[in-house]
Length: 457
Image 1 (spheres, rainbow, N blue to C red):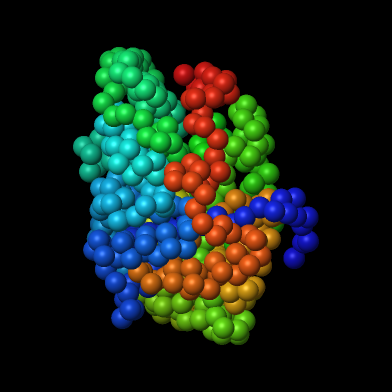
Image 2: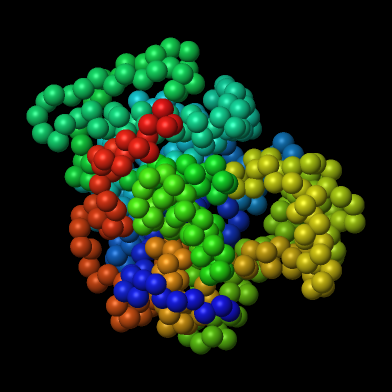
C-alpha cells in the first residue's frame, strides 16, 4: 500500500450512520435482526449513534418498491417510510445528533419541500439536513403520473433550480422581526410553464437552514456538489488511493466553483467489522458476507445484469456463457447502477471469475467484500485515523450489517480507541449539525454565494 503523508495531523474522525432499509447487505433474516420499519429499530440505532457522538443519522429514499422483470424483489427488505416523517419522530427522542433526509428534486415541489425540511430544522433545534438526489427514471416516475418526463441531461438543471428556490425561501425569513419577503421564481428555472410567487411560512433555525448533502458520483453530480453542497456522500470508502483521487478531483471542482477547497466535507459510505483478533475479525467478515449474499441473492444480482431470470442456474457454478440480453441496467437495483453498460460489467466479471476460479456466488461475495474496514478495534481505529489525516475523507457514513444492534461494537469499542488517539470528540461541542461537521455559514449567507449561484440562474 502506498504510504501517504499526514497532511492533516490533528484532524478528527467524524461518523454518520446510514439506516438503509432497502438492500440485501443488511442481514434482515438473522434471528437477532429487528424490524426494518418499526419505530423501535430507528430509535435504537439513533440513540446508539448519539451515545457514540455521531454527527448524523442518515435516511435514504424509496419512491418505488424494487422489481425484477415485473415482480417485486423479495430478496430485499422492501418499503421505506418517508424520511422527513421518520426524522421528525426521531428528533423528539434525541438532543444533538443531526438528521439527514434524502429527498429528490424531480418529484417534489420546491415550496412544499422547503417548508417540510425547514420545519424539521426548526423543530429539531437546527439538526436537519437535506440529501439532494435527482431521480429521473420513468420506472419511479410512474408512481407520480409523470413517467420519464424529465430528460436525464436536465435533472441537475432542475435540481439546481429547486435548491436555489428552497434557499431563497429559507433566507426570506429575517433573523429577527417580521419583515418576511415574497420569493419570485421564473417558471423556466423550475422547468414549469408559469412564474411562481411564494410566501415563506417557516422561520429560521439555529443553523440558518438545513445542511445540504449530495450523493451523486457522476461528473455532473460532482460539479453539482462542488457548487451547492456542504457534504458529499461518496462511494469511495474502501481503497485509500481511490479515496484520495476522488478527494483531489472534488476539491479541484470546489475551487473552480469559487469556494475554499475545504468547504465541501467528504463522507464516503462504508462498513466496519471488528473482532477480538485479526483472525477473529476476518472470520466474522467472511460469515457476514456469506449471510449477505445467499445463493438466491447472488443469482438475482447476476440475473439483473444479464436481464433475465437465472434462478435455474447453479450459484456454485460459472457465469452464463452468453452475453447479457439487455444493453444497460434500469432502476431496479437503485440509482447508483442505473444506466451502467451490462456487457462491460459482464466482461469484467468474467475476467475476474476466470482468473480467480470463482463461482457466481463467490464472485458476488468478492465484489461486495471490497467495501469497508475489518480488524480489531485498535487496527480499525488506526486505519480510520489515517484516512482522515491523509486528507482522503472528513468522516464516514457507516452502514450497519445488522439492525438495530449493528453500531454497538463501533460505539463501544472503536470510538474509545479513536478517542485515545485524540482522533474523535469526547463530547458534542455544539448543538447544530453544522457545528458538528465544522461547516461555515450557509452559502447564501456568504459573499462567495453570489459567484456560485449566479451562473446557474
